[in-house]
Length: 119
Image 1 (cartoon, helix red, strand yellow):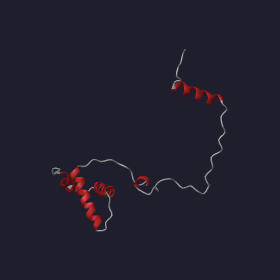
Image 2 (tube, one colour; image 1 turned 45 degrees about the vertical axis):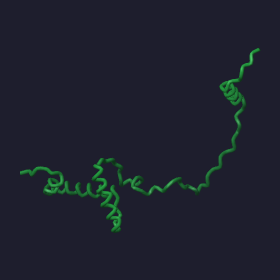
Image 3 (cartoon, rainbow, N blue to C red; image 1 turned 90 degrees about the vertical axis):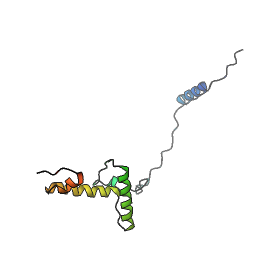
């Protein structure tokens, strides 16, 4: 006598074949949202990431520089000045760009980057 146990695979296969053979069931239509409820999920997009005037960039700086910046920004915050790192970088690069465009004497840049004097 052959006492074969039904395998799990055969049971799943038979179940799938039955579902395919039976006519599809009609699901009621999902309720339509109210036309005036256009609320988005999650936090409102009010930061720099959603502001088209800002562009995301990645820069590497030394850890000790980062810690010094954190400390200085915390001191400014205690004095009531709200400034984050991206605003600081933007301010510094903006001033540097203005300086470059002005064609001014490059003594400041020589000092900042330890460049040799040019005749």
